[in-house]
Length: 274
Image 1 (spheres, rainbow, N blue to C red):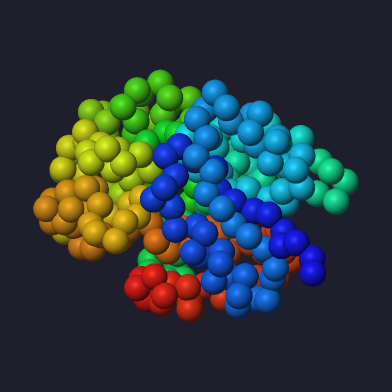
Image 2: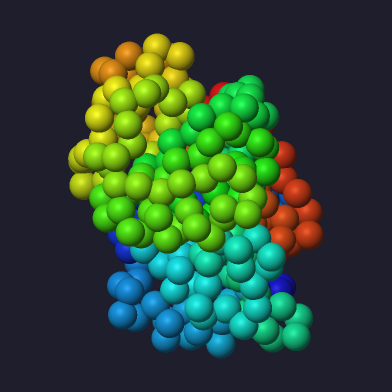
Protein backbone atom coordinates (compact mmCIF):
# COMPACT_ATOMS: atom_id res chain seq x y z
CA UNK A 1 0.00 0.00 0.00
CA UNK A 2 1.38 3.38 -1.07
CA UNK A 3 2.33 5.84 1.69
CA UNK A 4 0.00 8.87 1.67
CA UNK A 5 1.50 12.07 0.25
CA UNK A 6 2.67 14.53 2.91
CA UNK A 7 1.29 18.06 3.22
CA UNK A 8 0.90 20.58 6.03
CA UNK A 9 0.74 24.16 7.19
CA UNK A 10 3.62 26.13 8.70
CA UNK A 11 3.07 28.99 11.13
CA UNK A 12 3.97 30.37 14.55
CA UNK A 13 1.64 29.95 16.42
CA UNK A 14 -0.33 27.30 14.54
CA UNK A 15 -2.27 25.20 17.07
CA UNK A 16 -5.49 27.17 16.34
CA UNK A 17 -5.46 26.19 12.64
CA UNK A 18 -8.41 24.33 11.08
CA UNK A 19 -6.48 23.59 7.88
CA UNK A 20 -5.94 19.86 8.65
CA UNK A 21 -9.71 19.43 9.12
CA UNK A 22 -10.47 21.30 5.87
CA UNK A 23 -7.91 19.45 3.75
CA UNK A 24 -8.99 16.15 5.29
CA UNK A 25 -12.56 16.81 4.08
CA UNK A 26 -11.25 17.83 0.63
CA UNK A 27 -9.19 14.62 0.41
CA UNK A 28 -12.14 12.38 1.30
CA UNK A 29 -14.43 14.24 -1.07
CA UNK A 30 -12.00 13.87 -4.02
CA UNK A 31 -10.62 10.42 -3.05
CA UNK A 32 -7.05 11.64 -2.61
CA UNK A 33 -4.49 9.79 -0.45
CA UNK A 34 -2.71 12.38 1.69
CA UNK A 35 -1.80 13.41 5.22
CA UNK A 36 -1.92 17.07 6.30
CA UNK A 37 -0.22 18.17 9.53
CA UNK A 38 0.49 21.28 11.60
CA UNK A 39 4.10 22.50 11.84
CA UNK A 40 4.85 25.16 14.47
CA UNK A 41 8.15 26.65 13.30
CA UNK A 42 9.82 29.78 14.70
CA UNK A 43 11.09 32.33 12.15
CA UNK A 44 14.77 31.51 12.77
CA UNK A 45 14.12 27.83 11.93
CA UNK A 46 11.81 28.37 8.97
CA UNK A 47 14.25 27.88 6.10
CA UNK A 48 16.02 24.77 7.39
CA UNK A 49 12.87 22.98 8.58
CA UNK A 50 10.87 23.66 5.43
CA UNK A 51 13.72 22.42 3.23
CA UNK A 52 13.96 19.35 5.49
CA UNK A 53 10.24 18.66 4.99
CA UNK A 54 10.64 18.67 1.21
CA UNK A 55 13.91 16.70 1.31
CA UNK A 56 12.03 13.96 3.17
CA UNK A 57 9.52 13.74 0.31
CA UNK A 58 6.92 16.32 1.33
CA UNK A 59 4.71 17.44 -1.55
CA UNK A 60 3.34 20.78 -0.44
CA UNK A 61 2.92 23.28 2.40
CA UNK A 62 0.59 26.10 3.25
CA UNK A 63 2.33 29.06 4.89
CA UNK A 64 0.76 31.44 7.40
CA UNK A 65 1.78 34.15 9.88
CA UNK A 66 4.61 35.14 10.18
CA UNK A 67 6.33 33.29 7.32
CA UNK A 68 4.69 34.42 4.04
CA UNK A 69 7.44 36.79 2.96
CA UNK A 70 10.18 34.35 4.02
CA UNK A 71 8.46 31.67 1.91
CA UNK A 72 8.63 33.97 -1.14
CA UNK A 73 12.39 34.26 -0.62
CA UNK A 74 12.77 30.51 -0.18
CA UNK A 75 10.92 29.40 -3.32
CA UNK A 76 12.99 28.68 -6.46
CA UNK A 77 10.22 30.08 -8.64
CA UNK A 78 7.15 32.27 -8.06
CA UNK A 79 3.84 32.47 -9.88
CA UNK A 80 2.94 35.90 -11.29
CA UNK A 81 0.52 36.61 -8.42
CA UNK A 82 3.00 35.52 -5.74
CA UNK A 83 5.80 37.55 -7.32
CA UNK A 84 3.57 40.61 -7.40
CA UNK A 85 2.56 40.09 -3.78
CA UNK A 86 6.08 39.33 -2.53
CA UNK A 87 4.39 36.79 -0.27
CA UNK A 88 3.68 33.07 -0.55
CA UNK A 89 1.02 31.01 1.22
CA UNK A 90 1.41 27.84 -0.88
CA UNK A 91 4.61 25.91 -1.61
CA UNK A 92 4.57 23.15 -4.23
CA UNK A 93 7.34 20.65 -4.95
CA UNK A 94 7.26 20.23 -8.74
CA UNK A 95 8.04 17.08 -10.68
CA UNK A 96 11.37 18.72 -11.61
CA UNK A 97 12.22 19.04 -7.89
CA UNK A 98 12.00 22.82 -7.86
CA UNK A 99 10.06 24.63 -5.16
CA UNK A 100 7.24 26.75 -6.60
CA UNK A 101 5.66 29.51 -4.51
CA UNK A 102 2.10 30.70 -5.10
CA UNK A 103 -0.35 32.94 -3.27
CA UNK A 104 -4.00 31.86 -3.05
CA UNK A 105 -5.01 34.41 -0.38
CA UNK A 106 -6.45 36.95 -2.80
CA UNK A 107 -8.39 34.28 -4.66
CA UNK A 108 -9.76 33.03 -1.34
CA UNK A 109 -10.82 36.47 -0.10
CA UNK A 110 -12.43 37.63 -3.34
CA UNK A 111 -14.21 34.30 -3.88
CA UNK A 112 -15.63 34.36 -0.36
CA UNK A 113 -16.73 37.99 -0.62
CA UNK A 114 -18.35 37.66 -4.04
CA UNK A 115 -19.62 34.07 -4.15
CA UNK A 116 -20.43 33.30 -0.53
CA UNK A 117 -21.27 36.76 0.85
CA UNK A 118 -22.67 38.32 -2.38
CA UNK A 119 -20.61 41.50 -1.97
CA UNK A 120 -20.15 43.86 -4.89
CA UNK A 121 -16.69 45.44 -4.60
CA UNK A 122 -16.69 47.49 -7.82
CA UNK A 123 -16.85 51.28 -7.19
CA UNK A 124 -16.51 50.73 -3.43
CA UNK A 125 -14.07 52.39 -1.02
CA UNK A 126 -12.05 49.66 0.69
CA UNK A 127 -9.87 50.00 3.80
CA UNK A 128 -7.33 47.28 4.60
CA UNK A 129 -5.86 47.32 8.11
CA UNK A 130 -2.32 45.95 8.19
CA UNK A 131 0.51 45.87 5.66
CA UNK A 132 2.02 42.43 6.23
CA UNK A 133 2.05 39.23 4.22
CA UNK A 134 -1.73 38.76 4.45
CA UNK A 135 -2.35 42.16 2.84
CA UNK A 136 0.28 41.65 0.14
CA UNK A 137 -1.66 38.73 -1.30
CA UNK A 138 -5.04 40.48 -1.60
CA UNK A 139 -4.30 43.97 -2.97
CA UNK A 140 -4.01 42.98 -6.63
CA UNK A 141 -7.19 40.83 -6.71
CA UNK A 142 -9.16 43.59 -4.96
CA UNK A 143 -7.89 46.28 -7.36
CA UNK A 144 -8.78 44.07 -10.34
CA UNK A 145 -12.47 44.46 -9.37
CA UNK A 146 -12.36 48.22 -9.90
CA UNK A 147 -12.96 49.75 -6.45
CA UNK A 148 -13.05 53.56 -6.18
CA UNK A 149 -10.11 53.44 -3.79
CA UNK A 150 -8.10 51.00 -1.68
CA UNK A 151 -6.46 52.44 1.44
CA UNK A 152 -3.82 50.37 3.26
CA UNK A 153 -3.36 51.53 6.86
CA UNK A 154 -0.66 50.28 9.20
CA UNK A 155 0.77 50.98 12.65
CA UNK A 156 4.05 51.98 10.95
CA UNK A 157 2.98 54.25 8.06
CA UNK A 158 6.10 53.72 5.92
CA UNK A 159 5.34 50.02 5.53
CA UNK A 160 1.85 50.82 4.21
CA UNK A 161 3.10 53.57 1.90
CA UNK A 162 5.81 51.31 0.46
CA UNK A 163 3.35 48.45 -0.07
CA UNK A 164 0.79 50.69 -1.79
CA UNK A 165 3.47 52.02 -4.14
CA UNK A 166 3.99 48.49 -5.53
CA UNK A 167 0.41 48.39 -6.81
CA UNK A 168 -0.21 51.96 -7.97
CA UNK A 169 -0.11 50.94 -11.62
CA UNK A 170 -3.22 48.81 -11.04
CA UNK A 171 -5.59 51.40 -9.61
CA UNK A 172 -6.25 53.97 -6.89
CA UNK A 173 -4.35 52.74 -3.84
CA UNK A 174 -2.59 54.63 -1.06
CA UNK A 175 -0.88 53.79 2.21
CA UNK A 176 -0.95 55.62 5.54
CA UNK A 177 -0.77 55.22 9.31
CA UNK A 178 -3.82 54.20 11.36
CA UNK A 179 -4.20 57.80 12.54
CA UNK A 180 -4.25 59.19 8.97
CA UNK A 181 -7.13 57.14 7.55
CA UNK A 182 -9.56 60.05 7.87
CA UNK A 183 -13.05 60.14 9.35
CA UNK A 184 -15.13 59.23 6.29
CA UNK A 185 -16.80 55.81 6.50
CA UNK A 186 -15.61 53.15 4.03
CA UNK A 187 -17.86 50.69 2.21
CA UNK A 188 -15.69 47.73 3.19
CA UNK A 189 -13.16 47.44 6.04
CA UNK A 190 -10.85 44.40 6.06
CA UNK A 191 -8.73 43.48 9.07
CA UNK A 192 -5.51 41.86 7.85
CA UNK A 193 -3.55 42.37 11.08
CA UNK A 194 -2.68 39.63 13.56
CA UNK A 195 -3.90 41.82 16.44
CA UNK A 196 -6.74 39.39 17.18
CA UNK A 197 -4.26 36.67 18.13
CA UNK A 198 -3.36 38.75 21.17
CA UNK A 199 -6.95 39.82 21.85
CA UNK A 200 -6.62 43.39 20.56
CA UNK A 201 -7.86 45.43 17.58
CA UNK A 202 -6.00 47.86 15.29
CA UNK A 203 -5.88 51.38 16.74
CA UNK A 204 -8.08 53.04 14.12
CA UNK A 205 -10.87 55.60 14.55
CA UNK A 206 -14.36 54.07 14.66
CA UNK A 207 -15.49 56.79 12.22
CA UNK A 208 -14.20 54.62 9.35
CA UNK A 209 -17.26 52.43 9.95
CA UNK A 210 -20.71 53.66 8.94
CA UNK A 211 -24.13 52.04 9.06
CA UNK A 212 -23.60 50.73 5.50
CA UNK A 213 -20.05 49.39 6.08
CA UNK A 214 -19.33 45.69 5.69
CA UNK A 215 -16.45 44.52 7.89
CA UNK A 216 -14.35 41.44 7.25
CA UNK A 217 -11.79 39.89 9.58
CA UNK A 218 -9.23 37.64 7.90
CA UNK A 219 -8.82 35.98 11.29
CA UNK A 220 -11.27 33.30 12.32
CA UNK A 221 -12.47 31.62 15.49
CA UNK A 222 -15.61 29.84 16.66
CA UNK A 223 -16.42 32.80 18.92
CA UNK A 224 -16.50 36.42 17.78
CA UNK A 225 -13.05 37.82 17.05
CA UNK A 226 -12.01 41.08 18.78
CA UNK A 227 -12.28 42.94 15.45
CA UNK A 228 -15.77 41.60 14.67
CA UNK A 229 -16.94 42.53 18.18
CA UNK A 230 -15.47 46.04 17.78
CA UNK A 231 -16.96 46.49 14.28
CA UNK A 232 -20.45 45.57 15.52
CA UNK A 233 -20.06 48.02 18.42
CA UNK A 234 -19.26 50.76 15.86
CA UNK A 235 -22.60 50.06 14.12
CA UNK A 236 -21.48 48.36 10.90
CA UNK A 237 -24.04 46.79 8.55
CA UNK A 238 -22.55 43.32 9.04
CA UNK A 239 -19.27 41.73 10.10
CA UNK A 240 -17.77 38.46 8.90
CA UNK A 241 -14.95 36.26 10.15
CA UNK A 242 -12.43 34.78 7.72
CA UNK A 243 -13.75 31.19 7.61
CA UNK A 244 -14.83 31.50 3.99
CA UNK A 245 -11.48 32.95 2.91
CA UNK A 246 -9.72 30.13 4.78
CA UNK A 247 -11.75 27.46 2.97
CA UNK A 248 -11.60 29.09 -0.49
CA UNK A 249 -7.83 29.71 -0.40
CA UNK A 250 -7.39 26.13 0.84
CA UNK A 251 -9.42 24.83 -2.10
CA UNK A 252 -7.20 26.75 -4.51
CA UNK A 253 -4.05 25.34 -2.84
CA UNK A 254 -5.52 21.81 -2.93
CA UNK A 255 -6.26 22.21 -6.64
CA UNK A 256 -2.67 23.29 -7.33
CA UNK A 257 -1.30 20.29 -5.41
CA UNK A 258 -3.70 17.57 -6.57
CA UNK A 259 -5.07 18.72 -9.94
CA UNK A 260 -8.68 18.36 -8.78
CA UNK A 261 -10.90 21.14 -7.42
CA UNK A 262 -12.91 20.31 -4.29
CA UNK A 263 -16.41 21.62 -3.60
CA UNK A 264 -16.20 24.18 -0.79
CA UNK A 265 -19.92 24.28 0.10
CA UNK A 266 -20.01 21.03 2.14
CA UNK A 267 -16.86 22.14 4.00
CA UNK A 268 -18.34 25.54 4.84
CA UNK A 269 -21.46 23.71 6.05
CA UNK A 270 -19.37 21.34 8.19
CA UNK A 271 -17.71 24.35 9.81
CA UNK A 272 -21.09 25.92 10.48
CA UNK A 273 -20.35 28.85 8.16
CA UNK A 274 -23.07 28.09 5.63
